[in-house]
Length: 399
Image (cartoon, rainbow, N blue to C red; front, side, top):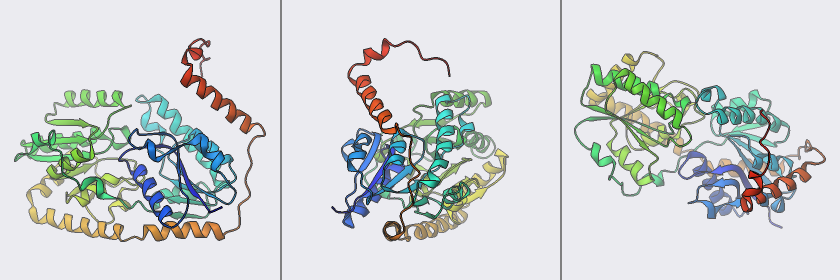
């Protein structure tokens, strides 16, 4: 039997940072001769054929195999992986503190809280714990994981290399200044502060400007409504929400951007910053969480809470071409350092180190764990094929 190094995670998303890393890891492992499958609970329909349902994971398990467990939130797939005899390497992508979602997404408050609580249980289960940034590695170390390391996010920009689709973005291709942000419209990214700074810029410095907010709002409709109410309250104009866009549409928006503005307060890495570097757009970002390390000397960091000060910074960059050129030059250097990291060598080195290291004793699971798993599988099948059976059940008691 050849050694397998499988991956397990809650969901494989299309075009997101975790999804791109998972697919990149699989390519490296298979090229090195390892069997490597991706086990998930859910996957974007465009990627489903690249994945295997996590219920199949016990059948693929073996004590000599290695499981790379991508942890970004608690999940059933995580708990199955915990119980298996395979050696485990945890890759931590960070969990947003739940307080950001209070009053906006109550279910996510609960999931993030449970995920952060569940994460600590893996300290005794993992043979190796890796952050995808030094910021995330330090959090693992604080929680008692050892040994730890960094498997850096090395972005693949192939999704931005195709011909741009400017059917939507073309409407903004004029002589106005396009301030932009790319990312999900979620509270920890503090989109309201991006809007506040842009409104100050448009009001006090450049009326011929607009804000392009490029990213999905799905699941956060309440937050999106709050943002629209905020826009109306302060009287901001020319703020455009694009919603989820394809890779070709994203390329078109990046090509139109004059300056990238990020006000996020919590990031484990923040890939769009690096995408902006790649596309040659000057980046202005709040110095919070992993953002300074991600930018690595490129772009411009700020700490002020005054939107007028941020607006003045945007104006300097837009009007001073020499300054903008120096910023982009520093971003190019930072990007070269990131892309120069030997991702393949690091990954395979971590796998080899795990194979050579003494096996960590398994912390064990409850005696009826697998009985409960089988019951959950049966219930899931009933829910899928006989949903009316669940509608006949009495309502669940209040939490």
